[in-house]
Amino acid sequence: MTAAVHPAAPHVLPNFITAPGETDYLMVLAGIILVGAVLGVGLLFLRLHTLPERMAHKSHKLQFEVVAVLGLLALFTHIHLFWVAGLLLALIDLPDFSGTFGRMARALETIAGKAPVESEPAAALAAEAVAESVQAPAESPPAAGDESAKGEEKGHA
Image (cartoon, rainbow, N blue to C red; front, side, top):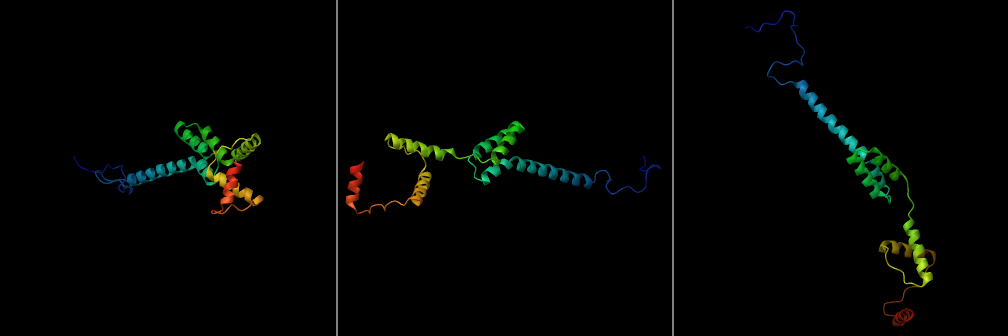
């Protein structure tokens, strides 16, 4: 057998056609582009998928945990309604009723004559104390060595 070229075949072949046993550079380039495109689209998808969670986290929303759970549900179940609900929750600013209801509960406890229950975090109580002191400055607290003030406080309790 001879390796003669068929008379109908072109005598000059394009650069992307390689001889048997040599590296096909066009296929290697196509493979690199394909892997890069798959990774790029995957990263874009994950970035878009976490958009509601990042929006809620950036604006310090109360419903951040709910938005995060909805995002995870959408990711693992492929139900896009969860993602849409998370996006809507991230965009909507829900009012903080806990502070209002807490003040109402303390006012009702004061009216009823019960001792208020200390269930709120210290930061919330400190913020309310600062807000109240700005509105109506109270008398200065008794000094550490002032025994008469301590006795009066114990007598009133």
